[in-house]
Image (cartoon, rainbow, N blue to C red; front, side, top):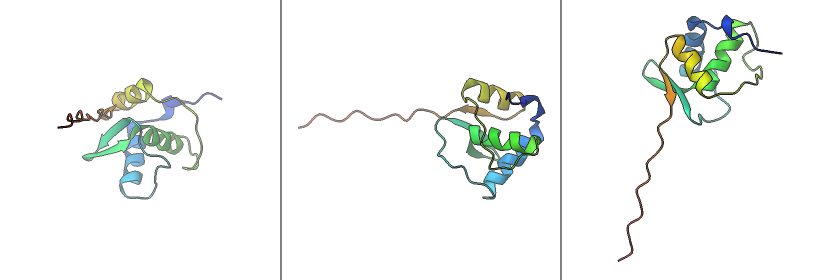
Length: 99
């Protein structure tokens, strides 16, 4: 069954973010690389979008949805007015040569 992403509005995304910020809902996995910024906090973009979809469609918040994340997730969040980006890669300093 295809997901109806047109049902998701900015208010659903904001509500999903608020649920995460207030600790009323916890992501099951650590954010891997996509983040949405809301009220100065970086949140896992795919989890936010999944919660927003559940809210928009009257599904239980624990519903499992299968969708690929990536540029589509970032584009959808940006189109709804939310700053979303890939997590900056951590720069590891090269080891200094042995003396």
